[in-house]
Length: 349
Image 1 (cartoon, rainbow, N blue to C red):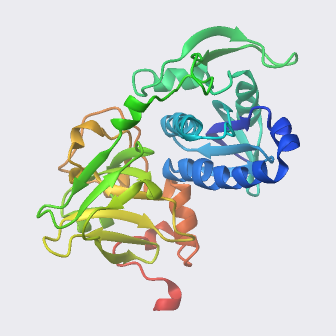
Image 2 (spheres, one colour):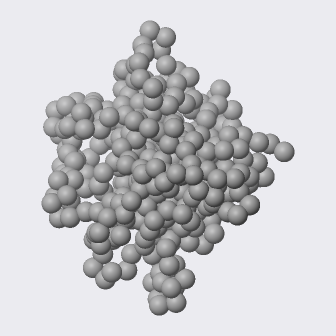
Image 3 (cartoon, rainbow, N blue to C red):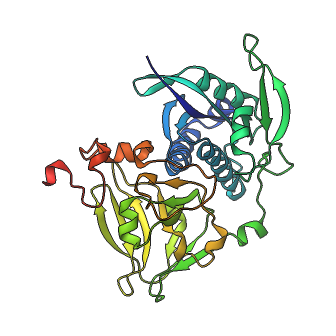
């Protein structure tokens, strides 16, 4: 059996059976949208992989604990925002659990202690909330903007040994979760940016899904710098207000956007095996880049030896990203040694 250590996220919709009994067609339609445009997008943008769906529940794995927790927060933030904007009162309230532990690989599925613990933590979380294990808390303390209350050691199941549990606490808001929005909050969420000459300008109406530094050779070549800082947003929330970026196929799996007038680097979007629901913006193109601090280093295999950033953010290689593995494999390039600025799909050679 293949075993590995992984961060596992488990999520479930509160009272889903009751929602289906009241409006089966509407609930299932909303579930399809939610699984694709919220769960799927948040997991992919944080470089994770959904490995199991149980109807209204999802299990995902991550190589980084911080990215798993950022994904959990992003999912709950998106759910709370949809609830605030709902005019009918039909919205989903979720519980999310995050653990780290040993898992057993069985094809595309994962089994074992890490998976079981995440599922039981999810069941313990408050509606609209997040519960994590003590091991997760030890890794994210001081690195993630999330308030978690120490709930002591709890026995998740009668046959289990007790584990240290930390949880968010719900507030009195409409969504009954730890996150809530009012009109003043939403009025201040407009994010703007553009190119050097001003020919391309954009507005973004949703907070970032994830942020980071990328050291990969493709980003180095396109940005002309040692490292590229980025922030990923829901593509549906990005609107170009005048000229749109010119797009360039920088590899068989992605395209990058730039200003046709001044050449400023602006966007990145994966196209394989499908077009992603999120758009990556170069942080330097934002009008207030100081508000979008990176939370991870990726593409670390190409980091230049004379350049370093002395922080304690997680560092990962491109080959460790399951999103990139899936994208490159879809064009016939399974070996990470073949990835890069000059990569060509076998059928294009």
